[in-house]
Length: 89
Image 1 (tube, rainbow, N blue to C red):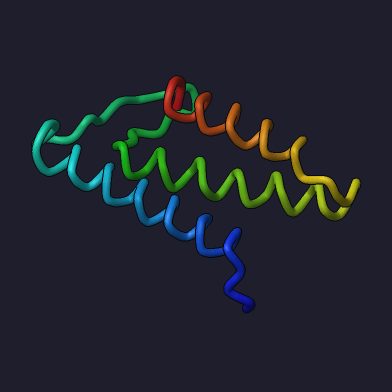
Image 2: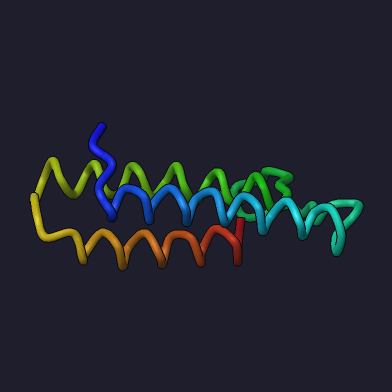
């Protein structure tokens, strides 16, 4: 894998999100923020982050397979997916 500036930024954002979720779980929400969403799953902040990252990867792969580049479309869809997951799931 080539470490381009875009790849480096992506991994920094992912690790930053994991760090923020870890700090929130460690200090602000000690008992965890568990809730049942529309999927019927009991999830915490970390679970919702994982679901949003996994869904975003599938959105980008499907877009690349069906449409190709540019990738601004799936970026918007992935952001909307992440907001939906943290809001409703």
